[in-house]
Amino acid sequence: MDQQNDELLKRISKLVRQNQELIEYHERLTKENDKLQAKIVNYKAILAEMKDKGAEIDESLIDRPRSLKFKMTTVLFANIHGFSRIDDGMDSEKLMDELDQVLWQFDELLKKYNIHKIKTIGDSYMCAGGIPVKNITNPVQVVLAALMMRQYLVYLQKSGKSGQNIWELKIGIHTGPVTADMVGKRKVAYDIKGDTVNIASRMESSGEVGKILISVMTYELVKEFYICDYYGKLPVKYKGDLEMFEVRGLRPEFSVNGEGQVPNDMFETKFKLIQFTDIQEIILDKLEKELPKYLYYHNVKHTVDVVTEVELIGWAEGCTDDEILLLKTAGLLHDAGHTIAYDKHEELGCGMAREFLPKYGYPEEQIEKICEIIMSTRMPPKPENLLERIICDSDLDYLGRSDMIPVSNTLYKELKEQNKIGTFNDWNKLQIKFISGHQYFTETARSLREVNKQKQIERIKKLIVGE
Image (cartoon, rainbow, N blue to C red; front, side, top):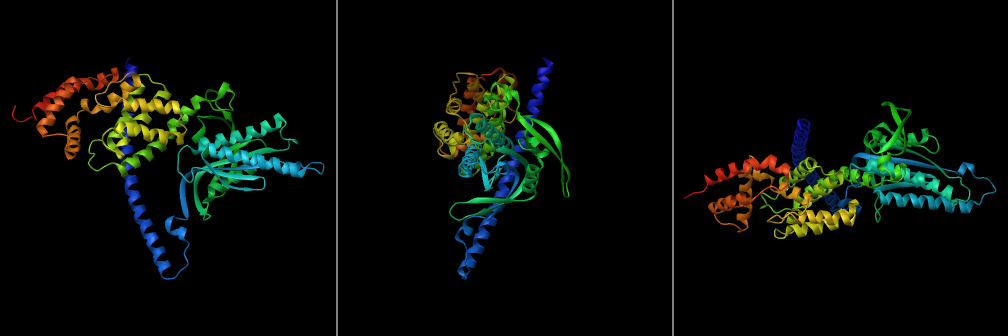
């Protein structure tokens, strides 16, 4: 029992720290965004002034920057070997059709795994994850795409659909910063450059046919998903020797039938828990920009608090990874409907979930469960299962916290500005009635928060004038 309590305290400490770090990060991001917007406005003004003075300016330059920097991009170089094995007796036109089919299949894989194709030159293929939309999942996605590329060529050979069975593949992958130059006017594409590109290319050249080589940088970001063997070192100018690893396949626990080839549901859940960081950044940014200014309580901080709390209570209540994912996603979106309207914001939040989450691979079944969890936060709360009980307790966690009164005052201020509440005395009387009738639903919340509620009632009574 003591060991369980110690573990719970460690989780609480970690989540509280992550909560504070996220709030500080968001504030920093907002300031950086303001600076960037100021630079963009100045950039547009300069171009517009040059145009007014008679300079020939590409109109597209006024609306978008032409060069972007990405701190974490995973670059894949693939070489489809086969041309060297062609002889005079082979049907060259048919072979070229086969190669086109292979490249088309690779393009489809990139779409599936949210990877951007850079270019194809003959039998060489280059793509990158993490552009043009930044994300932290791109190393996992690119390595998975590489495995699927290799598996497709094996399938062609075994199925007999490749008439000559001459196509083989070798791949090099490296993760690091790149500069992406936008090219094209009607259809925007990207050309990337930098050491990351050069290292990925050299890794592909250093490998053997049939192998997928990744740098130590990529390895550290994907090793919990894939089985990788140490391969050797690659000399890199000004950087010393770079360790390389060969990707064998998915770890058995993350693959269908443990064969290491096709990802299973456990892989998808673990991947989405990592991807949640990207989703959270997008939603919090949306809330920061679009929530009405009078939402002093239902603001970004409240959403962060709920996301933190559902994870804490969820782990303590023995939830699975899949259930934690549902809880965190519901917690993130449970008040997002406030960007549209104050009343019935839960229904509006569910509409946003149904529109937004499919883009990140959430199946319909998961989305509907998330919506059910969101809807359970309507007042008065009437949860029907464990996940709903957890989010309801998390949503009203402040009732048993030491900062309950200042937090509740922000809710009063929010309601007062909308003419939804009377005097401060009226509010405090309502608070006493609500807290007296409220009870936490989970054992974890009761043990952590219930003890403080009676103290809160006594404190609020002292604030009521005339009684």
